[in-house]
Length: 79
Image: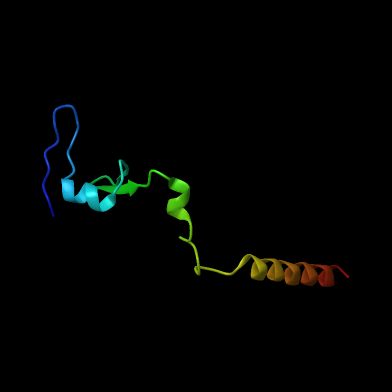
């Protein structure tokens, strides 16, 4: 953990090695009442998300097939 000083203007400085590692010029600040979280934001937000959800759920093809199965089941119940 590092300690940084907050100026009277409400500013703080991130250590240079942290800024270099993040490679970001903007951060998101989340206020959690008794603590805050700073997250680096990419200068190119779209590129930052490319591939971030890969392998974390069913494919669009699998979702469409499941929706078709559910629709067929609903149709069967109506008849």
